Length: 419
Ligand code: EPU
Image 1 (cartoon, rainbow, N blue to C red):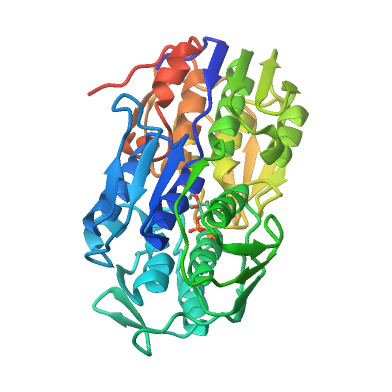
Image 2 (spheres, rainbow, N blue to C red):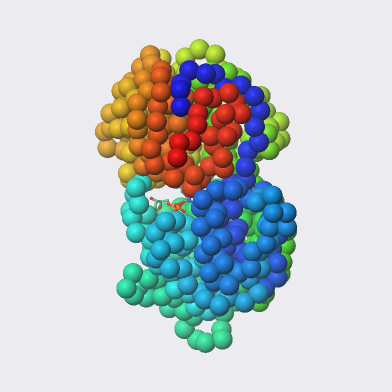
């Protein structure tokens, strides 16, 4: 890409990756069809669909030209297993564990390894399912789970996780829907994606109260039925494009988004100088001049999301002053720092804080993406840099963004995908 062009125009935001992934897994909880709209077309979704199909779930795209609308039906689950080959490419595969155990009474899921952003253990998922009566062993790298008494259901229980975990909450929530009795999830994640999953589950007949809070109460039911659901808009894709226009200048309109799920990010973007107008499902943003430096720390929802940390750092890199960014969710989510520095940024790391000295200009170079949000941050930096930037390993970007370079082209960016 060649930097320097201000972004101008209008694009549509896709459905949220991190809502779509657990929602696809919720189809395992019923023999009926589950119809989904606004599913983003990205690599992690394709991987999840492949995993579900391997288990015997039928997949249909009613309109072959529209991959955002699909129907899943898990009439029969032939193989309640998630193999290493798929789990190693996508940790969110762990989200099949709860539904499989609840529906089939057994599941074998490869244990995800560490990843580029941190160790990311799944001990809380396991602890919670054990509390619901599952027998769980780790054998040859696999989580082998089964309900001890054959032909019985998981048992509801009160579960307090040691930390707030998004996929952990989702796994336990899905399992609890089909358990016998009441489950109370304390310290539950409040991310909008958890709420969106819960709303689908309620449409499927689940009895859940406390949606949106950190205490979910689930009264188990023996079966769930089919439902139809529109996946919530991707707040991280929305925030990424807002950071991009704040870095390049210009004026953009994002449609089909949910500004109410982005409060913390919008506050910080306004501090940086972005002018924002919004309605229920759109945001328009304009920027002129150099961004102001903005310090922040990442935390669980509703605070500033870790999934926006790298993109905002690219913005701070060209701000008129110094800022401090503290990452509190993942221990190793600063891999983009070295690459941003290769583009001329001046960022140093002290423990879990990045100290960013804004520079006048970045200059284009070849850089390497290390994870999904790091790739987005390098794209933003490249769009603002002088000269040409090449981002390698963009398969990371394709995991989580629905046609990012097409949308940027639509906004007037000078960007192309190389073979
Ligand atoms: N943790 C544990 N034990 C557990 C679970 C979590 O120690 O059993 C720790 C993690 O290591 C981490 C913290 O708790 O330090 C929070 O992790 P969490 O479980 O909330 O993360 P996750 O569910 O694996 C989801 C998103 C991530 C996002 C995080 C935090 C999905 C599919 N993934 O991951 O999204 O960063 O929540 O908000 O929902 C991304 O989209 O780029 C991405 C990485």
